[in-house]
Length: 153
Image (cartoon, rainbow, N blue to C red):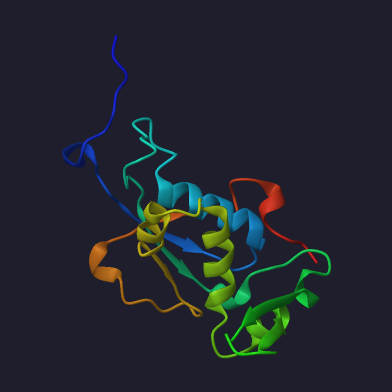
C-alpha cells in the first residue's frame, strides 16, 4: 500500500463562515488555523494548500481570558529607539479590531511560505457585515463545539 499524497486536482476548497461573538480568542484561532491548513480533511498533505477559505465576522466582540486585554503588543518602526507598544484592549477598541484575530491565527500557523499563502484565504471583519455572500459560505458554530469556547461573565 502506498502513502496517499494529494495533488492540485484532488483539492476541494469550501467557504466557511465563523461568528466570533463571545468566543475565546485562542480557541477560535486554533480552529481557524486547522481549517486554513486543511488538517480537518482525511486527505491532508502537509506540503499542499488544502485548507478552506474562512470568513470571520464580529471580530470586535471576541473574548479574552485573564489579564490578556492588558498584555502589550510590540512592534518596531525600524529606526533607532522606534519600539512601539499598544495593549490588546486598545487594539480591540481602536480602528482595526480584526488585527487581533489575524495575528492570533498567523502565530498558530507554521512560519513558512505556505502559511503566508494560507493566510490570504482568511478574511476577518469587525462587524456582522461581510461582502462574501456570493460564495455561499457554510456556517461553522465554534461556540457550540465545546462549552469552554465561550466565556460566561
